[in-house]
Image (cartoon, rainbow, N blue to C red; front, side, top):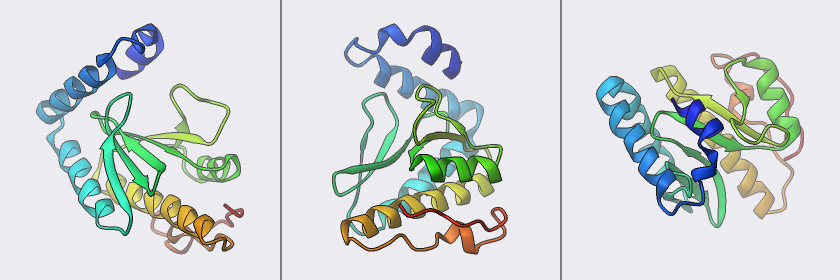
Length: 166
């Protein structure tokens, strides 16, 4: 359903509130059809909101948007779809080690990724992705080189790999 709407009803984006209403409908539908996904989204929100300088807002196309200072780290749509921005190099590395990470459903040729949250392990993985983006923003703000990500040092998520500088 989400793919159909984002592909074929994209012309409705300019209609004020249309995307927000659609995403709210997705969240309600998810609550009834996959209540565990709604719980995972709530858990991710409470975890990430506990980090210094993180704010949550409504994304312009629906969902929860997580911001570090004034920069968006990523957003989660009502159906459990995470969209997150990395550098193209990091995106490529993530896609290489985990086939569940896909090109963004709209923006294919940049650093945006899409990932569906379906299990408790996926929710933990998403928190690690947010940590990675968060540390990248903090290091960029402090003009420090990007350090190894928690994803790199935790083999339970996927095999270690070397990350490029953020």
